[in-house]
Length: 241
Image 1 (cartoon, rainbow, N blue to C red):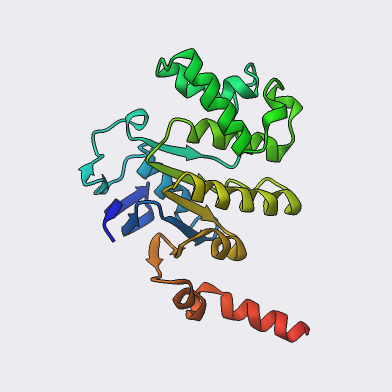
Image 2 (image 1 turned 120 degrees about the vertical axis):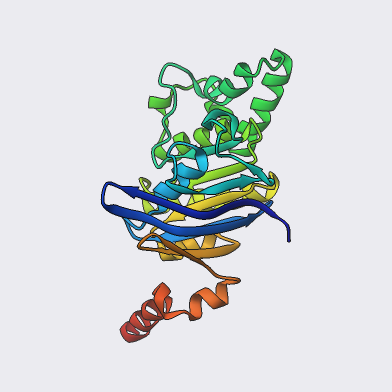
């Protein structure tokens, strides 16, 4: 399995606080890696360094073997999605999704075809003329995914993308993303603090603790490790029963 995205010996501090400690990461093409960690463990800082939004104090980021150190965020071919969709409030759903294609001067006929296909994939065909403020939280997040995916980025960096959604909408979005990831052969890092979500979304799982990342070869290895909290949660539910 060749490595598509690599982070090598990444170090980052803010003042006297060390946030990332010689952290290493390897991600294969078309793989989704869940990164589980508590608030303050360094998850978001890692994504921002990969995206080029933060500079590391040391280490390298490689995409397809190319060093990203001097590559600005807008040319890294990675899209960072926040918990909040951050849609353009003055553009309707269609134009929000089309935005990246218009920047790239794609012909209008192609834009209309590709955007409509994306809206169909995201189960939003009836919402194309609505403004962001007319949408539900789950619909806004779908539009954000569409805007990201339509430019065919090499990597999606997902920073707790469903954290602001209610439980029912969150479950629906998890299933939608899994389908979209398969349909579009997405390569992604999915950051979450929710144990069940990490298990559901990732092909593999990494545990971030105090700026150090441990990636497990498979889900069984993750479940069997006492540090992940899976065994404790299983014991809790057995106790209730």
